[in-house]
Image 1: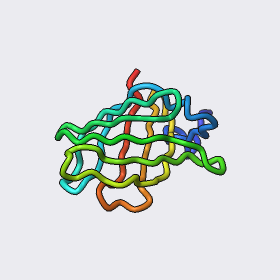
Image 2 (image 1 turned 45 degrees about the vertical axis):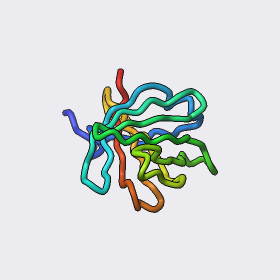
Image 3 (image 1 turned 120 degrees about the horizontal axis):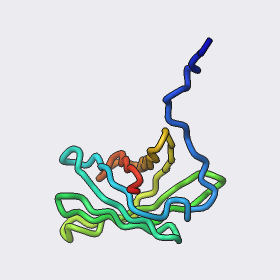
Length: 121
């Protein structure tokens, strides 16, 4: 007899112990003032990143670990008329089969809301 666990097929959160685990290219979307926007993000070994949306906005920031939790600080640098002060937030990584998803949620979603990226292989 074969039984399925209720958790089969459900993505599990991955504990990040070093920001280098995030290094590489990611593709996904950001919820902003104008709605959802497609975006790409490149993360370097030190946790710093640059994300660009299809509308031309650029966000730069850095991932870091605080009390074992994955956090980030992000600023929008373009368009030049609308730069933002650094906005902190929480991040999490989940894995499901062959897909790794990075979710970012600002502590105060004034300019940007939730962002979700899938690792590019």
